[in-house]
Length: 228
Image 1 (cartoon, rainbow, N blue to C red):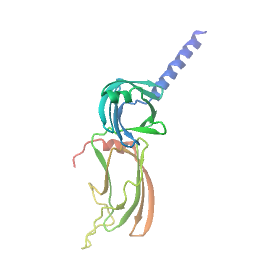
Image 2: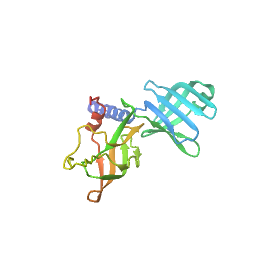
Image 3: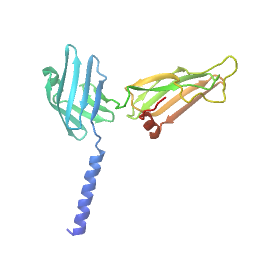
Image 4: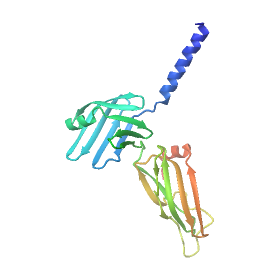
């Protein structure tokens, strides 16, 4: 083979291997088992190839540690040591990477070990407020986080609003700059990617709906500490 063709072939092989490695998502993180009745389980996958797991089922409860091996999109838990009954249940477990889930085959269905957010706080808040005297009723709010998980009908009801009886309110402006608003705190939810809101303006009256795509810059601000 000519030197130029050999060099080109090697370059293409290196690029192919690099692309394959880049396409593999890092599974390291904290996971909590969802969708299994009467069973609680948490899983910590470390980047060094080790794992720690806890499991409670019936009168059996304990922790184990071991190593994991990756085969494509499959993680295999092995070498578990600790609670003997838990180790027997965990050893050989095959988990399939599927977005924010590690899927575990439960026989007739698949359960999800859901990846937990890694945020510098326990929860974040979504609050609604309106200009003075502008009554609003939120029909529904759907929040999709960066993991692709949607929390439907997360917030509904009235919003925070001022209605001074002496007419001193300013309906043409917005209160601020720091208003908590009426809403809810989101715990175990990652940073928002999209927020869908449908609300009624009782002052007009009219129904509105909008889907807000949250930019990455806004999520970065949510991670920065700020004095208020």
